Image (cartoon, rainbow, N blue to C red; front, top):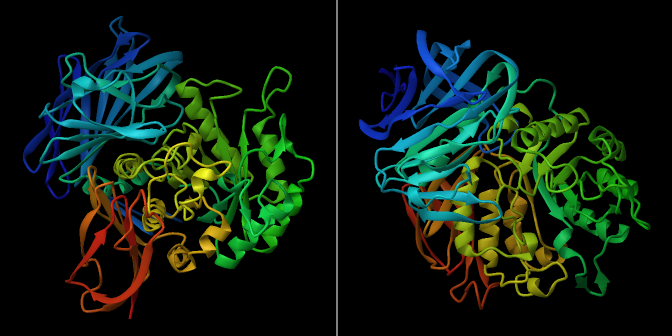
Length: 615
């Protein structure tokens, strides 16, 4: 067995190549977390057998800047071992290969590279992770529903998307992938004995040199520790090739949930006056974008606006006011009589209109139906076409997470990969938000459309929820902050709803478009999440609780020692409740400093945010 240690010597990975088989195990602080687990690859339905040629180990340090996101600078130190291998099929076909293993202070990643594969080779991965403690509990994403868990390994379904969190008690593990290109997406399930976590995939068709995605394991004593390791994804993806200086993150208004709303005799609809009203509000509040959702174009022609709507005039109006416009696009216009228009043509036309981005929905649910590998390749192709036309891209409706790919393509500005609020006219619960923040947000940015302020009237709206919308306005503000990772963040409510609570909305208006530093303080899947972020000398904080509520103690040690900060606190009122008093809140000011602990009572289903200004 070859032992590879992280630079700080706290994490170890063991690689064993024997009897034509390949195994990987993981230790943290001298505790075994993953037993020696098999890497099984099948080429054209034949298992690959391995033998070692040579190996080389070196310590490395990646330091690079990112144009937007949760950190201004990414620093990753790791030990990398490159194993040169020979591999052959049972029938005797031989190929050269490499196994790259990187060991970080908080986890590990490995990838396999196969060389000179014949044309149209069929590659299938069936590897396993065998936890040292098989009595732990799993938490997994659940599409556009609340994450699944806690559940035992033996109760896992046949196919779960990643990241999958495995709680072993003292340690938590997260299994995921990164640097995914033209390869089937990773899914996880239970092994045949119910005691291992197994990779399950569709076959990938490939040839020549094939780089499998990085298989990533994050480790920590708390779920927050896993989130604080997410920059590993960026380090595992390639740097951008080309000029992306035109890419700007920001906050956007959105029209979809406001249709039919009436304010002071004005009814919002799909018309120039309504859309300019959104743009005026964005300009007034300093918000960067307005996102125009579906139904703006003719049913079978995404290049023709509906009668009475002058889309070019709307976009030009926004650009004059320095508010960029996103246009919605999906393939639902496609049928036997109306084939898909080449996306190159669509993107070029939208760019000629002056649009700044595209919200892309239902990539493989309408029109062309893509299997896993093709959907991966098609999504990346769309990102590239959008980039060529200087368009940002935000994917919805079953997108692939592509963790870290925003480094390679900075115009890949966000994706849903969760239950976006009110999707399918269903409001998610406080418990759902906490779980999605812990699980789905671990994959990277999510466009969750938080920030409802007119909670009492939302159910009566044309596009409102069919179920109960249980939240508080202070929690809605905190939800928005927690998912505002410095990419694209979309607000769900009407301009008038925010104006009516302008003192609360001031927190959202104060948010920078991107961050210098982020710290996930607490991610308790059964109670609450707490996140702090810094821009320059100022700090921002957000806390959200599930239905239990509770007394939250915030350790202020992230503030600069010896400095005093004016803290504007936006929180629930004493009488606030997520069911029967949703819109009660309070705004107060305190002078705070490092070394202290701030105590705030959070209502059931509530939350709070704080803006710290250094004095």
